[in-house]
Length: 457
Ligand SMILES: Cc1cc2nc3c(=O)[nH]c(=O)nc-3n(C[C@H](O)[C@H](O)[C@H](O)COP(=O)(O)OP(=O)(O)OC[C@H]3O[C@@H](n4cnc5c(N)ncnc54)[C@H](O)[C@@H]3O)c2cc1C
Image 1 (cartoon, rainbow, N blue to C red):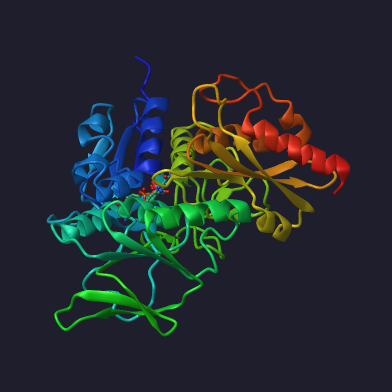
Image 2 (tube, rainbow, N blue to C red):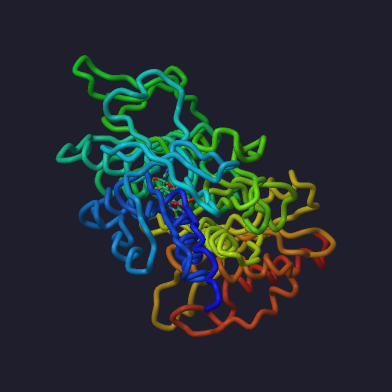
């Protein structure tokens, strides 16, 4: 009988988007491999994007944020070690140290490692942050702590600190239950959003009752004598609120690596190539802990994002199992839904494009979202950034009550393949009165950009 190859052990650190995509792909690529996932938290497969829907009351119960129970993964042959944080990776020895909650610490050996420990919430460094009523909202633990703390309490006003996609979506969701103050350090939310779309966003937030305090410098949280949060002090004024949520970005979670892998100097994320391979042979990384490669920008970038984490995880898992896949470059495509307003973007905004050295221009249109035979008029606001001369499409941003989020993927495809605005204006898009007019808003946008290019205005 021919000798069989020894069973390979692939260890994955982190049991969420990137880690589970990696583990599932590794097991499918090499069904003979032992694939072990160490997850620090009590559950795998958490949908962070659903936190706001549970907090707003749109989805009932915290269990709705778990996409799949452990059995879903073990039935597929994965070994899942929950509440088992990896505290140290000894990459040169191909071993790691695990400290399970309530159990004795132990070491585990691996042949291949996929590091997918995600990121940690960035926090404000201000007094009062660690006292009552102030939360971060990043991990499952953050979410359950916030959910429990909110419990039956109904603070009159909630403070959301942050001005990015996550802060906006959480702020809009919470406005269904509470009055919300959105506080951001930048002079405006989403600094690279086209001005016409920003106006739409601001009007919508005002309609939801979200009070925007932009360009503010938080100095500290204020609590009363009983320890209850009463507000956030910023620039000498107090923004009142009985609860505060910080959503001000994330930092790559690399502590267990202890310097074993090369980290990006700027972001601190694990350096990987397009195969998701790290600086050490046999070690891969993916998701919010690692860098990504951008289709339009040189160098490495930290682009924390669930869709990207899943895709990169899949590539890392396939390669850990002996494959030779490559991650497609990213475009920073994002979409959100703000209770009546869809907002999405792909590629570069104008300032970002110019800062990267592109001779970039921008065009804006307001176009009908669908034909008007039997539906009320709904408009989509659309902005495109393109390169002078070549006409290359560099980025698209969309906002409207509907139609913005599904359309951004067609725009992302056009940017990804390097289309000019002229080529994109000729794309064969479908017409059906319910979902799009004969001239889809994206085609209207690309045509306007083409005209601007030809006229050289
Ligand atoms: C409120 C909110 C809304 C969001 N909305 C969207 C959205 O609409 N679209 C989108 O694309 N993205 C969204 N995101 C971002 C998205 O959730 C993340 O980018 C994505 O989860 C990253 O996946 P990941 O696997 O890299 O990291 P994570 O999801 O953070 O997973 C890392 C896992 O590793 C575990 N871990 C950490 N350290 C260790 C250790 N030492 N040992 C073992 N396990 C460890 C953690 O417990 C965690 O389960 C949102 C995030 C938040 C917070």
